[in-house]
Structure formats: C-alpha cells, structure tokens
Amino acid sequence: MARTVWNSTVGKKTVMAVSGLVMLLYLVAHMIGNLKIFFGAGEFNHYAHWLRTVGEPFMHYEWTLWLIRVVLVVAVIAHAVSAYQLSRRDIKARPSKYVHRKPRASYATRTMRWGGIILALFIVWHLLDLTTGTVHSGGFETGKPYQNVVDTFSTWYGNTIYVVAMIAVGLHIRHGFWSAAQTLGVGSRTRDRALKTTANALALLLTAGFLAVPVGVMTGVVS
Ligand code: HEM
Image (cartoon, rainbow, N blue to C red; front, side, top):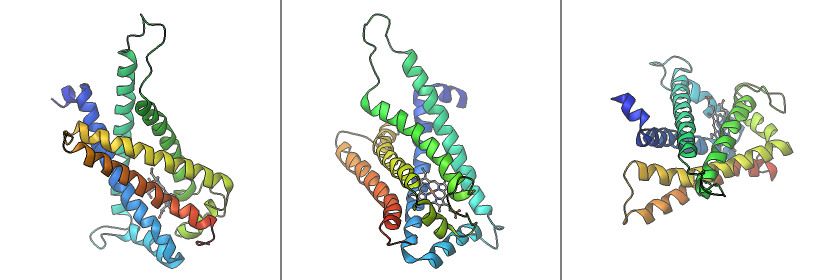
C-alpha cells in the first residue's frame, strides 16, 4: 500500500507538500528566533542556550534539539528525493522526439528546481558556518551565536551568500506553498485568491525577517 502511494506521482507530490510544510514551520520559528538578535547579545545567546535545554528535566541536554534535527533531516531527504524523481519523470515524459524545439519546463518549475539546488547548497554552507564553524570567517565560538552572526555579516561574501539564499527562500515558498495547497486539495475557485495572497505574504515576511539580520549588521544596528 505505502509502496503504491510512493510510486504514484500524486504520492510523491504529497510527500513534497507535507515535508515542505514541516520545513516551513521550522523556518517561521527560526526567523522569529533570529530577530531576537535585535535585543542584544545576552538575550540572543541565552535563547541559543534555551534551545539546548528545552524540555529539561524530562529531556536530557540537547535531546529536544536532536529530535528537531532528525525530523528536519527526514523532511529534507524526503523533499529532495521526491523532487528529483518527479523531475526525472517529467523530463522522460516530454514528447521531444517529433518537435524541433524541446518544450521547456514552465518558469515556475525551473525556478523551483534551481531554487531547490541553491537552498540545498546554502543549508550545507550555513551549517558549516554557524553550527560547526568549519567555514566561519572569524574565531567561531560555540554558545556565542551573536558574535558568530556579526562575524558572518561583516564579510562581503557572507552577505552575498545569505542575501541570494533569502531571495531563493522567498521565491521557493511563494510557489511551494501554493503547490502544496493544490496537492493537498485545499485549493478551489473561491479559495485560490486567498491562498495566493497567503503564499505571497508568507514569502515576503520570511524573506524580510531573515534579511533584517544581515541588514542590521551592515547598518551597524547590530554590532
Ligand atoms: C539571515 C538568515 C539566517 C540567520 C542569521 C541564521 C542564523 C542561524 C544561527 C545563528 C544558527 C545556529 C544556532 C545555534 O547553534 O544556536 C542557525 C542554525 C540553523 N539554521 Fe539558520 N539562519 C538564517 C537562515 C536560515 C535559513 C533560510 C535556513 C533554512 C533554509 C536555516 C536553517 C538552519 C538550520 C537547519 C540550522 C541548524 C539548527 C541545528 O540543528 O542546530 N537558517 N541559523
């Protein structure tokens, strides 16, 4: 049964929609958490510490965080694998034999594919930059995310990478949220306008909220 669903196009689209919504929830929480940087180093670093102790004493140190990480990794893999397989199917199904010009995927589809690749690369960079510190520009200090974030946005390439990625996040959510709603059967003639507005508002809110941090550092509001 599960196999039949997974092998069907609609099954893969459902996996994409659900995993996408899980990641969207994470992004909303992450963006709100990031904005705490405007309340100063004490509050931001304390928040990072809380992320590791949440659920105590029932949960051990970092258990909740690891639980979230596992859910996110599963969501990322499910999203990427189904995206890849759906693209392969789409390319194979193209009747390009008898026409001169290959029919290309729509603008939205191409944006989603490129955007997805950019975001996957960004997530790897971001983890190596602010979680492990492997590619960090300054002297990375675990437990001191405030200074780590300021260091990142004090370099031209840090700002460039993040600004490009945040625009990709916005575009991806704008179309992805809309597609997920259609796949999950929420769309209808009466609801489509509201869904489009919600998708646009979410995309704008997330892009602006995330961009506020590098802009804050670049303008000296956060230093
Ligand atoms: C300007 C935008 C962003 C800033 C300033 C930022 C900042 C940070 C910081 C400081 C951490 C480390 C937190 C800690 O160790 O306590 C972190 C972790 C993380 N961020 Fe971001 N982030 C941004 C955008 C994003 C975006 C767009 C995504 C996803 C597409 C993302 C995904 C993650 C993930 C998965 C982690 C690892 C969480 C963990 O397992 O510890 N971030 N971010």
